[in-house]
Image (cartoon, rainbow, N blue to C red):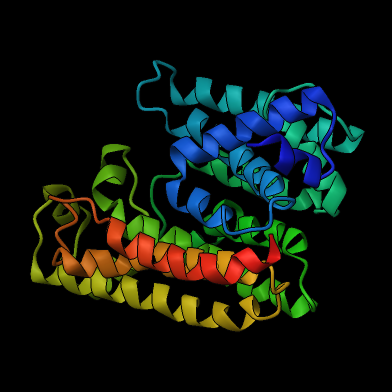
Amino acid sequence: MSLQELTAAGITDPKLQESYQLCRKLNAEHGKTYFLATRLLPPAKRPYVHALYGFARYADEIVDDLASTLTATQKAEQLNSWGEAVLADLKRGHSADPVAAALVDTVNRWNIPIAHIEAFLKSMRMDLTVTEYQTYEDLYEYVYGSAAVIGLQMVPILEPSSDLAYEPAKNLGIAFQLANFIRDINEDLDRGRIYLPLEDLERFGVTKADLHARKLTNPIRDLIKFEISRVRQLEQKSIPGIKLLSPASQPCIDAARILYCGIVGAVEEIDYQVFKKRAKVSNLRRIKVAGKAWIEARKYF
């Protein structure tokens, strides 16, 4: 992150700058699509988005670090300890934590409700104890905290013209998460989790054993097609909300929508072979989408 970006954002304290830099590093290393989209925001906006991503990624690493020798109970203790400290810092208004310092500053500057942070941490705790969801409504409790609130946190930074932007932002966050679930079916099985609602499996005659067999069958293909349709419905619901954001913010979010929801298109392109391949949006597609958005976005830099 350049000094110009931090200065443009009004972030001049050296310790805070270090925290924002760390969050940017987490975004660049682990969220390449998000990072690319963030580059389409005006420089003064970018550090705040990095702060939100850095916090979420750090918590997620505690939960999903497969190389860790910690038990689920120990991970829960670590997450709870860190999460409670972050919440205390948010209420205090400042933090010495290397990651949370930027988060607290961002929340304060943009009046982001602490309830969104609490909901996110609740979902991270669920990941340590809940391995499957019977219904979509059950899953929604998880994805609200893991994804919907990410969209809700972003909205103030993106300066909407109306509060009507919040519901579409929530839908887009959920669409991103569900696209992840579809792409990562195989990896999530390795983690002992099934994020596709069990009622959806039953609807298409798929059992948990069928998924664990990791062989694409026609019923599993139909199941994945159904889940993809849900992503696309949520994506369509999100589009009107993008037009309610600041014009300077719209190219970033629209590019993120196209690229991240495009994961399900990549799943279709590999003929739903999620057990054998990891679906990826091609670099050519990324360049085309980002290039078009850059032309529109640069007028606000």
